[in-house]
Length: 580
Image (cartoon, rainbow, N blue to C red; front, side, top):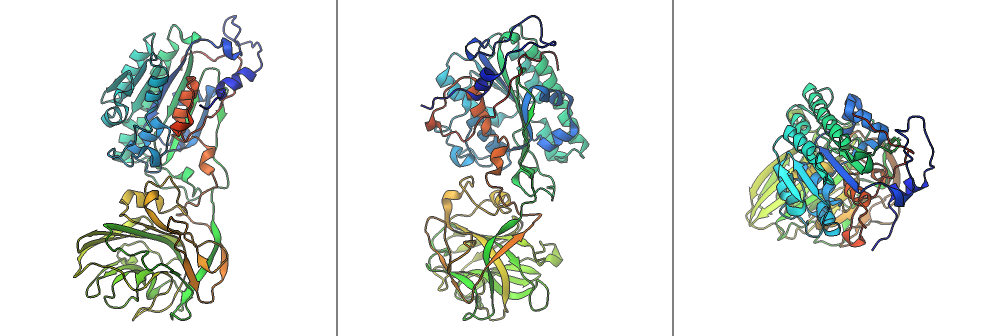
């Protein structure tokens, strides 16, 4: 058991005790932990789709006034999938998706028995405490909360949720109340998630009016001054909008951007801001891959010939980042050289697969030895332009059912091309090893590029996972398919004669040719290089259950595996009461 003094209470105990002219009545407010009034209680209000930066710009009057007694941020972080199901699970269980198992809106592989919602923790620790969940979304009520709360109702509309929360707060026994609103997300999905969209702004202001009514009902409790309420006001996620090119971090991603206020009438106002220097360059040391002949090419080749083989797998996903250098014609267009392949050479229908440049475009090639499938991007026909000297992410997905293969090519997580191909036989054991850089081709010329962040999974990744992770220059256990990773070569080791495999199989690539490790530092309006532990400096949605359980005085067990931490407040010596 993990013994601790709750941080809020510790701060309260340390605060000095003094009188103030505007202290209500003639009451002395004790700072001694043992003399704090009443049972701690929690009001948890969730506004789906409310981007933190939009809230900051709109300044909704109720939320804006609540800042005066809140620890708050406009730069919070939601779950990386940026959809309702996964975000709700994260903000109710206090763990990341890799633990709770709910990705996107798919609940079939949930691990709620091992990582239950916080209502279950309350039920087990304080069975007499009344807990109530009032939601506008049936899935939140039925698939996540279920019987864990004393009372759980799906009400269908935000107005009905508001009325039900107010009715609950009028009960003496009200202790933990969750209210969820979806009107902002509905408006954002239909019209757009930005303050420039009138319908989105109107939805935020309408919900702010509901919050005002709820807060006034809370203040109207006849026992309020003898109770200790923590009000958590937050958004589960943001929504799709163009990202500010000056902020390339996850904290600037509109889909992940949330806001959070931890409110109590004795909290001093404290804003939590994101780390600065937001235009983080993608930087490190890698090898420039060049060549037009196998004997002299600078390239990496895997020492294990089985890596990258589709073989008997039902799915395979391969991905890398590449930056082209100018070629012989002083532009970024190359005539058919492979740059990532698992084939002996890129000739006719030689068995295997390859990604190769195709003038302005890129081709994904898959062959059985007799026939082939080729997916070709072309910027002149609307595909993503990659002949610009910038870093781009290339992802190929192969799905197999017998001798039928489905192949998909993504550029920067989107621009998807898909084709289906019935091979004359299974595409097994291509002779050539997995290769980054030049591979022979009967009609190709040289390649000159940098390649990093090479990854292979033994499954076909879903489109939304590809989109969410394509800008990132790393992978970690937050990736829902981390356990399916069979090879990971950052290609940024900085020294030595190989690209090391940091995946589970440790199958390094040997570097051939006259290679040289070269430092690089490139700003990108697309890539999201990580700020080391940057997201821990702002509230994440998985922090909220941790905060609630600590406020309620429930001891946190290490075995629960909670991922969050608390955001301690400083206390003023007297509360600020009054209507919102």
